Length: 214
Image 1 (cartoon, rainbow, N blue to C red):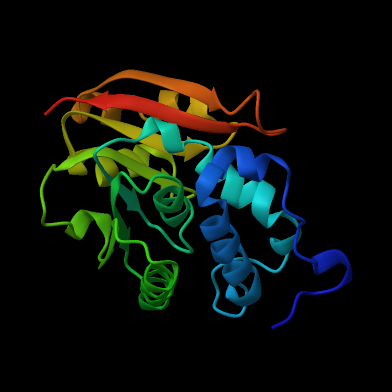
Image 2: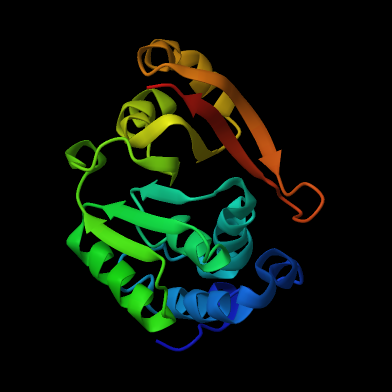
C-alpha cells in the first residue's frame, strides 16, 4: 500500500520527533513507516489514524520513555503502542511485549527482527496467563481497559517496589476513584495522574503511576 493522498495521507514527521527519540529517530521512522503502510490492512490501526500516527500514537507513547528502567512489560501490545515504540526509544531497558492475538504477535515479532531490537521478547499470552511471576520493574499498558480491570492484569507482574505506568485519557481521575477496591487489593500506593511532555509536545501524555507492594 502506498501513501494515501488527501485526508488519509501519513502525517508529516513532527519537529518534536527528533527531540523525543534522539539518535534512535531513524529506527522510529522505519517503524512508523511500516505501521503506516501495513497497519490498516493488518487490523492494527483504524482507517483514520494515518494522518495523526506520529502525534497521537508514536510520540504519545515515546514521551514516557524516561519513566522506565531495568526490565519492563507492555500488556496488550497490539501494534506496538507503547511497548515497541518504548523499546526503540530505550534500548537499555529489557522489554517483554505480552499480546494474545496471533496476527498482532506476528507483526510484533516481524518488527523486532526488522528493526534489530535485541532488547525485546514477544510473548503470546493474556496477561492473566503470565507464568513468570512478579518480575518486572515497570509494567505499562495503553488503551487496554479501565483501571478497575487493568490493575488486576498488570499489578501481579510487578516486583515488590516496582511501578505501574499506565497511559490514560482525560478520565483518569475518575478511573482511579472507580478502582478503589482494586487499588487496595493489589496494595498500590502513591497513585497519581501525571502529564508527561508538557514542554515538548502540543498534547502531553497522561499517565497513571502507582507503586506496587508485594
